[in-house]
Length: 230
Image 1 (tube, rainbow, N blue to C red):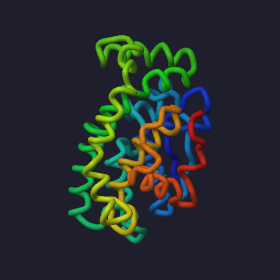
Image 2 (image 1 turned 180 degrees about the vertical axis):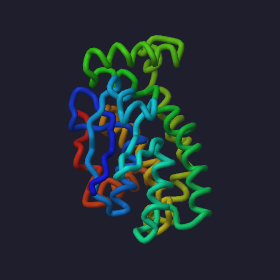
Image 3 (image 1 turned 120 degrees about the vertical axis):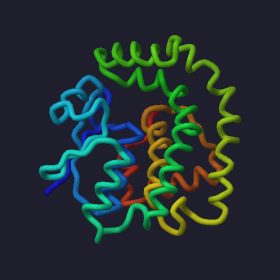
């Protein structure tokens, strides 16, 4: 049975952009599980599966409904143990938790603010009003002020990626010689930016950029099927 993935979209239903939904899409592909993306705008999220979660991703796998990207990855690992592992053992689960926190604080911390207006501009009008209202409460200032100066902050952001950059000098993926869920966590953040904004956050000669390109090629080029923002 095909798994349903409720996928956050803007005005174009063919362009899912949520970093957390991308984590799950890559995890499903890693497990070689058939899935169908269900385009879900912001204002449709409260109605997903009877309001099971305030956010997506949410999946339906037969009679099971699971929310939250990490919880979904753990569910897939437990439910489909004979398919390729997302974690490579209990230690991999613990390491992925660290990667998730690092990504949220270091990667999302910059990308989230830098992309605000690009996200806003790719939403339908009703979602735009919701997005502006909720994000301006979260940031305590207009979206335009949050985004202002992102170019000047870019070098500092790139410097903060040095642990990842240095690690990639030893191995091609965060997971080692092959990707694991930790790769999909960080990939989801950069794919979010790639799909929603033309703002280039990685230099072409950065080893992190080369890693991201390798991730885009995974699973038959799943990540590349959604074109980059222009």
